[in-house]
Length: 325
Image 1 (tube, rainbow, N blue to C red):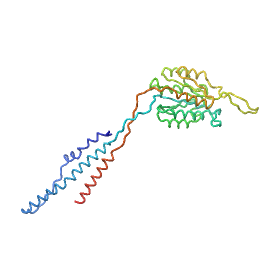
Image 2 (cartoon, rainbow, N blue to C red):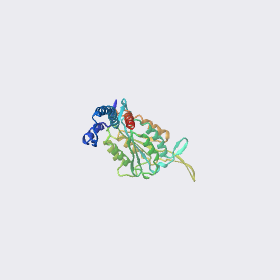
Image 3 (cartoon, rainbow, N blue to C red):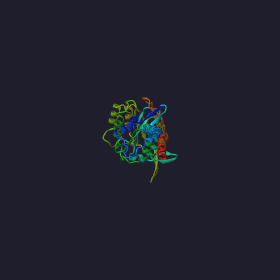
Image 4 (cartoon, rainbow, N blue to C red):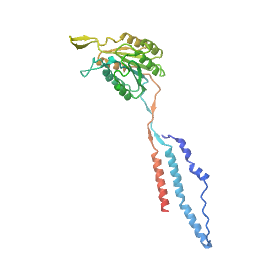
């Protein structure tokens, strides 16, 4: 169907008549002349001919004005409504940027990488699969920051996640503040569609709110939290006395992360390597979506250039006729 984006501009159609009515017509200048009686009949015939032949530019001008006003009202062709893929989940991803995330106990393509690099690689694929979900990003260390609000623009979320660096938010870990910030950003959304995926490799060492208190606040606001503890259980390091095994995840507070997840109806996952981390995100893909009102999009095609082109063509014809006269 044809649709006018600015139909109120059609009110300009009677503008030429209004100007003609308000402005007085130019009166011919009276000059002295000799009147020859026998030439009156010839003059009358000539006048009627000129009036008849000059009416067509007036009609063309009126038609050109009509087409010009229609073009200004921006006619569009609306296509059939297309249903948009919207699952209904509002998913916030909270990533730890504390100093301990630089521990290189993960491997990608048989190359040792730090925990944040592994998290970026797996989380980017997870975000890319979130078609129909609104995704947000929280980065936390000593403080928690909202890096990206909820958005359907997954590409921007992935870009900002890849640009994050260790220590950007401080060297400590404020898990409680990250949860509190997620509650604040998601509290106005549907109560059964709020999800937070929190990934950390340590224990809460900073912030104004304790993790368990923040979890109670999240549960009261119907925010489901899935916690991921990242870090290997053992790692071989070289020293002056030879190789020895250490536990690089000794500071990981699994007990608190488990309580946070269980108190909000979520689940705690343990990621000791890249494969386990990827499997966790695959499980999170199975979260049941919440149905929302269907959203539709109607494709639009601009048509204004057709009446505009015709109006310009008619104006050209009128101008050429004036030149010939």
